[in-house]
Image (tube, rainbow, N blue to C red):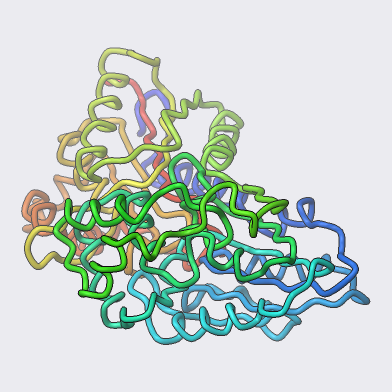
Length: 436
């Protein structure tokens, strides 16, 4: 039994899964997007977009756009992230690779730029942006090849750089991001509808801000690359060092009058999970929606807090649920195994919990994919380490080898949801009952 909660292990896991589902449901485009749609213009309406939620956003837009008003466009999403029935409408949906880009994304970005050429002040561009868009629109500046972009992406992903830092580099190497797509739309008005997957919900960071002015500089991007030892091709070194590849900045006349609306955020989804917990009779505490740092360290800190609640009733009284979001990082040392931010967080937490009775945890990516694996995340239970030991698994060795996926797969504790068609970043929930 789950301490004072009176729940079995299966019931505790089911409760955590309900909280995750509530968070994802709060960020679904079909429920949110219609209220943010602008009025049709006198001229044409062109839709562009990129991200793991962009296909679902396009489907919601098509379903609510007047049938007798012109509408066409192109969005690019991750492979497998097109909702059933979404394809074949007035907005074309292309799938491409994430997190390391491929030719499909490169060509989609070229086509997107061509699509917005020749617009007038009577036309309207609706941009549908969500997390993942940076990799899905990899078209680079002259002299930088797709192979270069792929190598830089892999290096950044392994470096431990924050999402702001990574996207600052991407924007300045890009031919479409960092406000460049919006500049290409001039003189048409651009209305950007974004689903946030970044700490702080900055639209300039979401999908590397293709339609949003960029406050960062070439010098910033070059400094990030050097700080993390990311090798750049000669053309990129020269373009950044000279400032020739500077992005459109706030106040740029080509972006004047544009609108940007963030329609879904990590905090709103965490609040939905908190509401679901309270409806189940539990106190719920949202720690933060913008946590960053090494995944394993953030996991250790969550574990310490849960142990304090369970053993000492501070800073909150158990039973309760602790919730957090944000985007942690994994600095890969050596070859690395399988796993993403969520499972590495959980393995760090499991080691720090040391089998603490009455504490369960779930961590998952709200897009349904933890890194590049087939799972959204995983569960930790009070007996996780004991079951692992019985199977001859070393939690420490798997953590040091960045192989958390294999660890939780062997235990049967992976959370597999498939694509959710939205993305509001990491979701973490710890269920705590009082220590006996």
